[in-house]
Image (cartoon, rainbow, N blue to C red; front, side, top):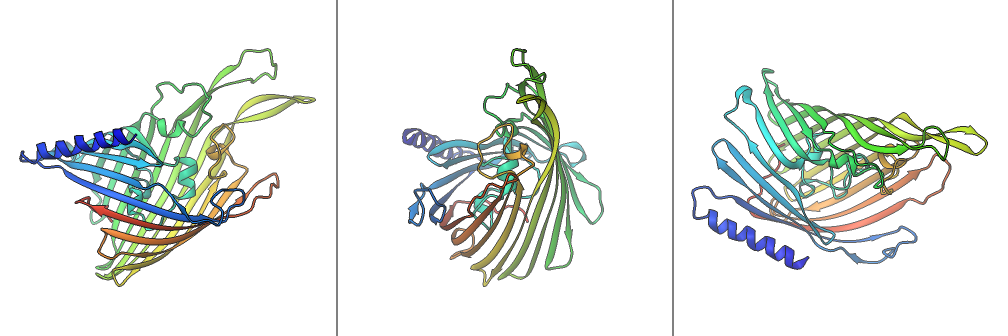
Length: 389
């Protein structure tokens, strides 16, 4: 793995040297994260100890190909695994109706937060419903997205419509499921940016995504000798989001942001056919998830924040036809608080945070809450730009 990382870095640096001799130079940025933590989760080897996690890294390469299009790549090194998080081309001007087109592998525009990389979050832990409904890496897929600027007067309103391969949602179901085949999914978001006054801005959005998330062979007759029947499992996500920002001066920023998701999908269930006899059925379930956080930055270098999380399903469960997004019986709640110190703008940050999770099981299972305390140091080297708003 170290040889692979070294090779990739050499290629990128060589490419940078090549492009530096041309008229179009790509921007290259490196984000590093170092975490040390302890937890109070009984039965874990980290309980009550000072633990050092392996360092994490994101390498960004982006720039204009020509006046009309640009390209970007993001390599992420996490948990000793190097992977391509994003790799896409983006036509940003020159198309009719102010349309933009993005194609490749990238973070899907469902909600506001999903398209923001973790290093730009005010907090440290991915929202619980993102983990359950999108996966540990967020809603990240291969596809094409069309973005339109709508004629809404003083409101800045955009409409995003995308078609995607579906790898992100299929990874959340049973690994032994039938190959879902070529069944693209659809995702989109309608968002409006509102300037309330010289110091206050608000963005609101509505999102949706639907398609086939999995296929499975089920025994719908209850006869153990019968051939299984192949069924498709469909899902529909509806989402709402908002972000409020108040900045009366260059030293103070209050940010309040929240999102909610409603999930309606086909789930695998069991129906009784007699004494100790069951057949598998496909049934519709509805569940949900949401988060809300507030972050107050003061004196330009310090911030305090708190986040509340709720999701259907048990965060961290092993994916199968009855867990995570397919679970409408159990739930997880979380509360996270943090203090951040920014010595020099956004180039470095030292953050101390605590998260507490509680679990609710419909069958009465008693599970202790889980508390984690984390100290994070993060740096940003290079011209990687801040995310809009």
